[in-house]
Length: 154
Image (cartoon, rainbow, N blue to C red; front, top):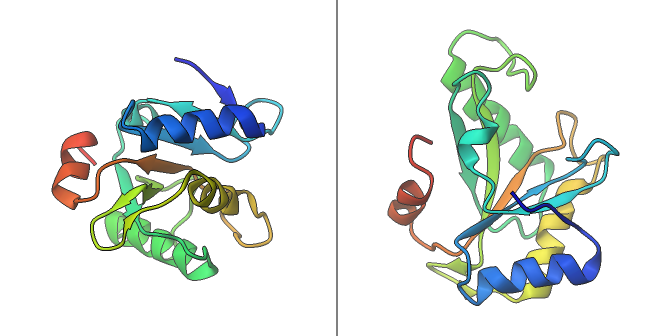
């Protein structure tokens, strides 16, 4: 697995490879390395985010802009999945939520490298989230049926 730091050139190259179709997805993990720095990981297996076999829930959107309502939807999805907890807890939940941005939106068309980078970097905003940081995956697939094929079991 290749880990690419989020400095501008490496980030741009990874996102560009998505837009050019060289890869299907890349995972952006805010504060994802041991030093607390954000990382962009091309082709990280989403199954690797499962905690002890617990499922991964993917929340798709354009996140333009990202706001606290998106986190509330993620927590609601976790709560619905758990059907036990009064309030979804990101540490004890039986599911992991990953946000997804498609560079080729079925309704809106493609978005630029700079736009993808800007939207992914929103997920590093610590003031926006009370339960974050949340991982975000950028994909090239515009339709939900294709996303299901790309991430089986989610």
